[in-house]
Amino acid sequence: MSLNFCFIGAGNLATHLSTALNEKAGKVIQVYSRTEESARTLAQKLNSPYTTSTKEITDKADIYFIALKDAVVADVLSEIDFQNKLVVHCSGSLHMAVLNDFSSNYGVLYPLQTFSRMRRVDFAQIPVFIEANNSGNLKILTTLAHKISESVTEMDSARRKSLHIAAVFSNNFVNHFYTLAADFLEAQNIPFEVLHPLILETAKKAQEMNPKDAQTGPAVRFDETIINDHLHVLEKYPEKQALYNLISRSIFEHHQKK
Amino acid sequence: MSLNFCFIGAGNLATHLSTALNEKAGKVIQVYSRTEESARTLAQKLNSPYTTSTKEITDKADIYFIALKDAVVADVLSEIDFQNKLVVHCSGSLHMAVLNDFSSNYGVLYPLQTFSRMRRVDFAQIPVFIEANNSGNLKILTTLAHKISESVTEMDSARRKSLHIAAVFSNNFVNHFYTLAADFLEAQNIPFEVLHPLILETAKKAQEMNPKDAQTGPAVRFDETIINDHLHVLEKYPEKQALYNLISRSIFEHHQKK
Image 1 (cartoon, rainbow over the protein chains, first blue to last red):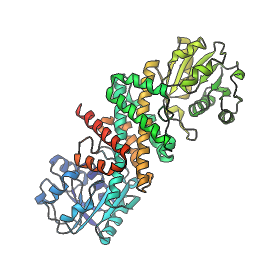
Image 2: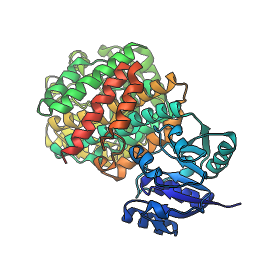
Image 3: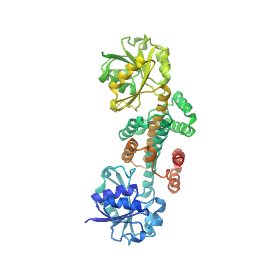
Image 4: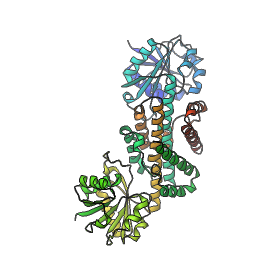
């Protein structure tokens, strides 16, 4: 039995998830986005119809995937009659229970990855976390998730939120430090590309070693000569200087507590 | 003409650099470390003699590589008579001029990478930055560096220090955020391994996109609902809460300034 999907939302996550589902688990029969360009772009990619009006959302889908910003989910969903079909959101931090107002069948499918429209990712390698309001829906989501990913785990909303926080630390904050480094190098006319091998190796190490054991550099050994020297160079960049000081202390204290 | 090298220092950087030089550019004829175990381990790997006494350091080497902690370089070197042979340190932040007291021929060879003894790295892919006290020594180091790396750049001490600071941001600080994420997940009984694909993809993205353009997450769009929700969950972890707050603000402000 082939499943029909409707996507509410057409951003980065929707693009990658709908593509994986369309290839491996059924058919996306409609894409909705308030923004016409987003809706059309994704619909063309999936070879499916689209709409920008919640009134025109199909009643023929078996599962409705909600890939919207958390803050607008309730407002958008209140405009749609799901006729108690299975409604599934894809957010890390949004509690599953918010869907209770809109259908008697609902769940969560959260792929833990950073998505950019232009970068292809191998969805099979992405850990997917699922939750559902009853065992029948959980079974449907489990079967579905296994078709697109090799790593499927059941997880409740509170723990999924913790996972999202850890993802913020290891993606959003990490990427911000790449940005600060790029910024600083640009001011010295040094191309950011020189850091590429270091950045990649740092991430690869974390796949094989406990990151605490992999920590190197002046802060972990509290090499005050180098730290003070670096802080001095950063005088002209007060924000970077403050962060350098704070994170160095955090590293040192964290490793003292062993 | 084959060159003979002596390594003063036998830590992670010395291990990888001496191995690359021994394979591609000449022969390591002696390893010195104050710590016998370190000296012996590296010497065995290189099939060379070792010593733990500065008095026994060979006078037969063409180039002496100094791979010591910055703070002890001057003390150790003052115990050695280099007879004006070429002395080369490998530090990011140490000024080349500190070598002027110990030989009339000196320089720097700084490989920009994070080294762990147990992890093999492809040295050819590591960017190497060189500097020398005159054009003859620069020529020697240029030829040598090209034998072990495909990326060789001349850079003075002030700019090399900036590069080191950027490396601290993109390795030391990044790895600390992996550690904080691992720590937090451990407290929720969630295995750190679930973050592996995200961590790797974050680093790969930075190889292809400007990291500022790759920034995603609640902070860059100032999604106060999620940020406040995460800060609330982090109540029990005051250090992580403070960092979450500070880095989120930094991300937001940095992207406002566009």
